[in-house]
Length: 234
Image (tube, rainbow, N blue to C red):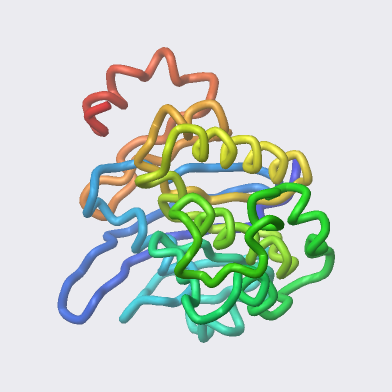
């Protein structure tokens, strides 16, 4: 069995006086893909941001490949091999597609080459000289994904990558996720679109009111569908 690459234990998170996460516990092994499911405001995005230290205050334990990171600044956490694709995408409008792609620093060995990325995302090759503002929503999402692949990150944190996108773009992203998983990358995915997430993930963690209230393995989806419907309203 592969090693545990990310282990979160008794994670509590605050934004100012607001106590958002109330003892989150989960782990992900090398090469696994897990999803964080739940309704809006449940604490899914805060969980991902907490892993990176992008929150006001956090307590508990977050170990990345055995290294405790709860007291580390974000830049040092990222250099342990984390790549973050935020919900807002973070594309720089004044830079070209290719300049955006080349911007993030390397955080590990073995990042994808620009040619390999363009092979995976042919739309980006066609638009490589276009300004960030001229890219469609789907192209911006592909670019946000592509940037972290070049960095050499081995743990990908993906926040709502399908939100607001056309079905054909969602299908493309599904193929990309499968290819990345086949390469051995470890992926944590916050996702509202359960139909997109269900066939991709090894395991689903359902978050409600800042706590994990259910864990569903891929072979339990059918038997636990009623419970998922209740929690997610899908």
